[in-house]
Structure formats: C-alpha cells, structure tokens
Image 1 (tube, rainbow, N blue to C red):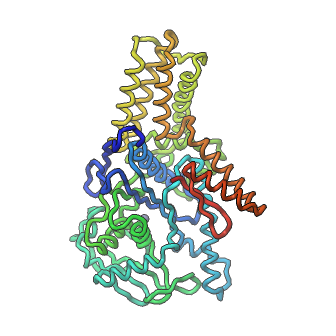
Image 2 (cartoon, rainbow, N blue to C red; image 1 turned 180 degrees about the vertical axis):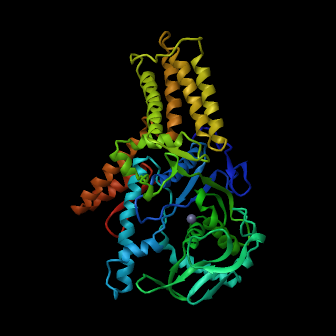
Image 3 (cartoon, rainbow, N blue to C red; image 1 turned 90 degrees about the vertical axis):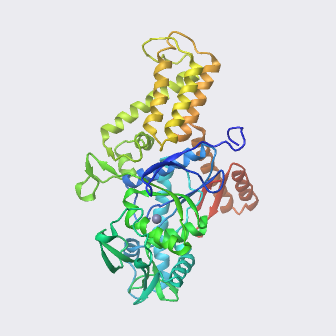
Length: 488
Ligand SMILES: [Zn+2]
C-alpha cells in the first residue's frame, strides 16, 4: 500500500446532491471506489465550461487515489445523438447505405475524440480507467430497455420506446421535483426538456430518413442519450456505483432519467453519492457563442494562456462555487503558481535567491510542514476544499520564506518540504512532477512502437508494449490504426 500501513485510507466527505448534505463516502467494496462521470459529447471542441467539469472529476479521482483507494474511473463518450448525426451525415447522398452512414458518424466522432484526448493531456487530466463509447454498447442498451419493458416501465409507440414515468414513483428524488405541481403523461422525443411537466422520455428512437440505425425487436433505430449512461455503467460496474458525477446542469433531466432507468431495472438504490460541479461564467456572463465570450482551450492558447495556469485557476476555486472566468483571474493564478515554483527551486537549491519574506519569529520547519500536511488533507477530505488546501500550502511557504533568509534549513528539512510539494502536486499537477515526464516518455515510446510496426518489426513493437505495461500503461490499438493509452 501507498502509505506502508495495509488498508489505510482517508475518510473523504462529499456533498451528496441526493441528500443535500456533506457525507462520508463509504465504498461498497473496501478500498475500491467506482466512479462514473458523464463525459463529453464528441461533436466539437470542448469549451472551458466543459473543461471545468473534467477538471473537477480529475480532482475527485486524484484525492481518492492519493488517499489509498483503488479508483475505477469511467468517463463515457457520447458518440451518437442529434447534433452528431446532423453534422456527420450532411455530406452523404440521400441513398447512402447504413454501413456508410455508421462509418461517417464514427469517422466524425473519432476526430473529436482525439481532440478531447489532446485537451486532457494538455490539462494533465489523467486518462480514465474506462472510456467507453456509446455505440460500442448498443446491445447492452437494447437489453436494458427490454428489461424495463418486461417490468412494465417501457412501452413502444410508432417504432420508438419510452420510459413510463407513472411506474416509477421515485422520479424527481435527485432534482427534488414537485411532482404534484407538474403535468403528467406527455411523451417526448427530445433528450433535453424543461421541468414543467413529467415526461415519458425516450429510450429508443425509431429511425428517420437519412439517419444511421441499429436493428432491434422494435425495428430500426438508435438509443436516446439517457439510456447510454445507464447501460455503460451497468456493463462496467454492475448494479452498484459508489459515485456518479457530472456538471450541475445534468441533474435534470439527464441524471433523474438515469436513476429511473437503472433503479427501475434493478429494483434497488443504484448510486450512493451524486456529486455535481458548478457552472463557469465568463466575465460575469453566461458563456455563449452569440456573446462572443465562448472559449475553447485552443482559443486560450492562442491568447498566450498556459493550459496549466488555466488548470490551476480552476482548481484553486471550490468545485461547488460558480467560477467567474476572467483573464485577470488567470494572471492572479499565474502569480500564485510562480510563488510555489520559486519556493520549490529554493528548497532544491539553497543558493537560489531568498524567499524575501519578513522575519517575525523562529519556527520549527519540520513541525510546520507536518501541520501544513494535516491542514491540506483535512481541507481536501472536507468536500474537496481546494482553496483551504492551498491556503495551508501558502501559509507554509510564507512561514519558511520569512525564515530562510537568515537561517539555513537542514537538508532533512528541505527534503521534507520537497516531499510535501510532491504530495500536493499529485493533486494539483501544476508544479514540476514526474508524472508529466512519465506522459512524455510514454508518448515517445508509443511513437517508437508505431515506427517498429511500420517497419514490420513485430518483436520490437511487442517489446515496447510490454515495457509500457511494466510502467503501468496499457495500449489499445484502434481499428483505424491509431493507438490510445491509459494508465492502469
Ligand atoms: Zn450521463
């Protein structure tokens, strides 16, 4: 085990949207935490509001992993829905066959999957343990809908299948809907709708002209958005999930519908803890293409913003508070980051320039470091309170900077400070850290393997694959010849 004490794990408390309370997370399987995160719809570049959600999910994962848990982390990719179909099919002739349509959709989403992975890399968001694509789980979705039908919770109409809300009295438990005040019994085909009525939402959409389809007992069609997550989660994690996350805008209807589908099928509680990240605003306004304040990571880079500064700015704010993105805020984040990096250099090299702090009192560095470490973890374990956690780190930096202009720290004290910086960086990933060099090394080895394969040097390609495996990196060869990797 990471801490040398077998079975040691921190208790992590999170705000559970289901109960509206901060509660300790107690995974069902000791030491293993299963987390399902609603991931991106891969039809365009992620905007910085989406990226905030993925950064919050990365934070959650890192806090559990660094607290002694074996984290099984799933981020799904939605690769079939209205907008994807519209955009991927528009150049095809009217009479294109289904195989051509499915391939066009796959090619279209493959492009955006790659761009999404690039964003993850640049932001040092760790690769998920599982990254399922919805279209790889169509049989599981059909089986789930059949199960709901067998329980009287789904019905077919004109080739589409709907969830029967009147059969699921718990509907609305997450969003706390006032069922009595709502209209009943409308069935809707749209994946997103307003909360003024209780809608029988769509599970399976009968095909329309010009759309790709899959065949099932209700005829040709495709899955609705909501069923995708229920089916992938069931396939990867079984009937019990410790944590399910997403952006706050997914609480209704998406997560409410996921609960109806999964719990309707299982007949028992499915997710113990629901966690939602708040919105991102831009200069005090809702981000929107029409306001001209819509940014992707590429837009930020073109404006000279370092992705890691963006990462740090987001992670410095509490995930449950709305974040107001401003370029001024990024400057502040950059200065704070610089302070940590300068301090780190000073701890590495006692001849580096002084901390420049004002001497007030003599401190005992080892005791201060120990205290900062306690405060840091207390804050993170209390609903991922990153502002408090960083405050613990900055207090330590201030205290030591005020000392070491006058008093040389011992090498033991320096090592302890550096170890604490590494420990904090395992969460924030914003000051030098070996995992980044691991990423670079892995990418270089994957390139070398590609070259070996091109030269038909299969033994060398296999040797590199095994070496990566020993480093904890698993390769997956895709049909189109590309390679994706994830850490074990
Ligand atoms: Zn979802």
